[in-house]
Image 1 (cartoon, rainbow, N blue to C red):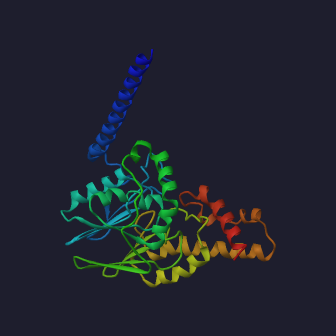
Image 2 (image 1 turned 135 degrees about the horizontal axis):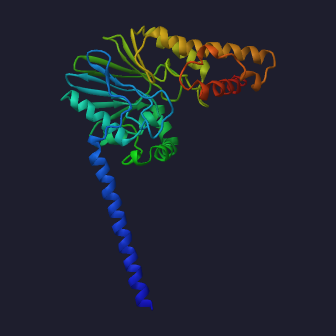
Image 3 (image 1 turned 60 degrees about the vertical axis):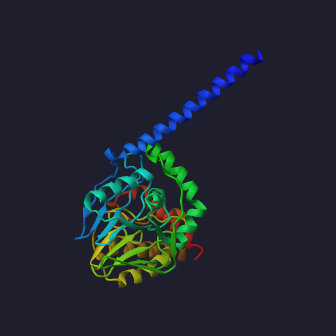
Length: 323
């Protein structure tokens, strides 16, 4: 009887080994086969002679949009390519890289993370496999150290088989205020102007083109989200430094390329308006319920307004009670 059980155990162990081997082969095949399965939500569009951006969905990340709900921008120079945002996952980063390689023989030299959110950072391990260093603000690294595994788990639940190959890695190069790249005659300034939407937010400024890749500093096509660690008062102050760049072209974190007038209307003006309304409520002993009744109709045409309008009002009210 014992011999029979031993044989069954050996057989079970071999079955487990075979099953694991087949799963690994399947995963490797999916990753290897991905060139024919480009999963970008939108293909890159040309913004200027050497700047391109794959515009993401102005909606939450889903399986259908492959987590491509932010803009993946890249700058092509005669000495290499700089990519802004690593992408939500390994396969999405690979899809973007395939498009870049189809457009230029120049190698990707750097990847810049606009912040520590999953859709900006979780594709980093693909780029590091290619030998590309990842640059981020020091707060982005800290954010990934503290919450990166939770972000990765959420992404895997949402993206399912599209998450294959993705692992959490940290940036290679960090900075506090400013990092400058000189590449192929292009001056690329990576700037942390101050607190805005989330920890580690940076903008990428191309002074020779008067073009700014704004990340989550600036919104226009979709409602901006106010999350628990968003300091809206500081964001308003930081905006002065952002506006001082006097950019002619703005590539925001979400939505297509636009100008300063447009992002000012839907970012700064919205923040100032909501803060003024909530200040009036607080001065008159208003309640959280009153805050949800603030008239936001001027912004209801924006994407994800239904999901974020009331949430923004309540979050800002609770934060401003303690300012």
